Image 1 (cartoon, rainbow, N blue to C red):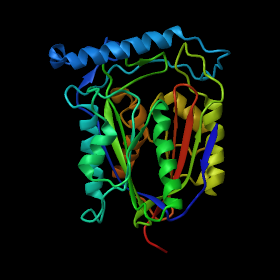
Image 2: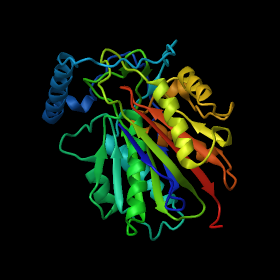
Image 3: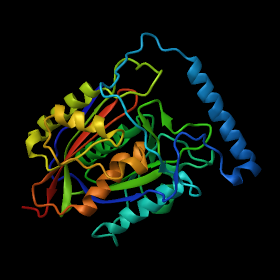
Length: 344
């Protein structure tokens, strides 16, 4: 399935970003253990039991004629350590980055998000707590909040696509907040097969209408496989990602050679370089910060890397950023942003 957002210049603009990556690091191959406080919590025990049953059920289900979109690039080494959050709940990390992103907006005294979208693949520690609902209540957003999951790193692109389409069709939608957050707790493993390792963290992107200076969203493209992917291992469909990058460039009215910065999925550096080369993106413009000591932030990965890039780059009017990511069952997402310093 393919879904595309056509360019709507001057409508959806990325006005502010924020990220939180915990300082603590753990070995990704160690079995996840529950926090110390969880031993005295009946709710924690119920949560782990429910999720363990879900995992056992998923392993017993066999897909009919699964499609194997295995990456052509074999991973040679896993990170020695990944970011691990020892205390904050998933929703607490999300609240932290959400408040920071809203506070960075130039007209922060009058801005309040009309829409909140949460992207997460992992689960909230408290079964009775909705991360999207918590952000809605604390930030005072007006629209009904909702969450996107199970697309891993592509979740952010689907959220950005939805916001862009909503702003194009609804003049009353002035501001939207997209938050990605992950915290991996037992019984889930941090190992995504032999492909990558999962880390904890959160990031937020504030999308505004017709704001300057800001990054215009020129095009967003999301693709999901029409047939189930073989479930024996996590995988990336390189061909689909490369094709999607080309389609997104066409939609945005640009060629790969004009891209000033590329932000790939932080799944594997070798994989990222291979896809960048196949898509004919410029050499030396790829952003891969802290790959070996952070891990893959999954749904929070792209907004976290975008925040890191925007804090270090000094853009000029008209420059472009290309973002791409891949889900671990063959999904793909791509977006192109253009910096606009003024209304001219």
